[in-house]
Image (tube, rainbow, N blue to C red; front, side, top):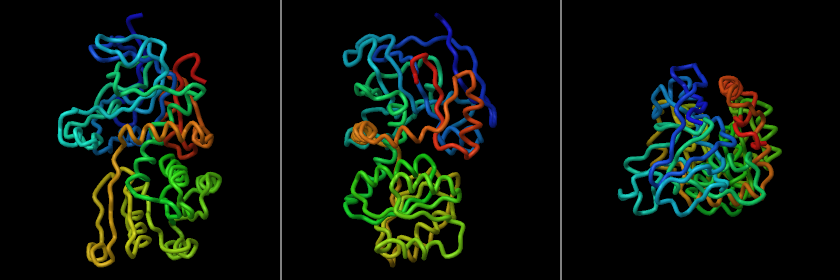
Length: 343
């Protein structure tokens, strides 16, 4: 078969499925038949034409799992038939960040499905070292959720020791909810979650949040602080706009840490005098490394709630409907199923 289906975003607010030439694996690459691929918040920002690092047109798909169907020259770590999941950060391997183990900050970083061809297709070709084996017994759904879970695991790792910590998670979208799971697994004892949608607050409670709040309500900062045993040790901002930044700083005073996990769509202002005088630490969190992915694989394998966050599935030919469902706000995570055995 010389052709394949591929979803792409040719322009803002447009998702199509086109027929393109089927790739062949180059030296060091393998070809993967996609089983499932997730629609990410970054994909939705790209669709809206407002992602700061994704230009249109683009071919999305960086949350993916599937089966190796062909192997390029020099590949010794994988073989045809292996079940794999994608770690999509494409790095140079030679810069200071790569050689020091922080390759998520690579000087030449590209993200598969953001700056390159994506996995929202029948097959995709990728360097073999960007793939991880899917454990026996793990479903395709759970395997595909490892990528966004890795983001949450990385953020909680950057936060430091969370044993017994009081934390707040701003935003109960998929990353916020996965951060609740990752923080709980890391030992956080009290977790406050905010989201304007009642259904998402209820889901956060079901995942282990100690208390939930509507961030638009009056005196919400005081109510959150009052519900926890002390001011939050760490605030995970999974929204990253001006309103959430203001709330995060107010919650972190004094001496707290803010982890910026969401992708901002523009600049925000901060009260620098308070950051300095009250010893507030603001820490960015960008993607993950293999350490986080391996931890996420282990967590996804023992935490059934990870799989439960996928609330809608669409076939590849209905990719436009999948994106529309994802940006409707009615779902936590939308997956596109591609191969016949992807359920």
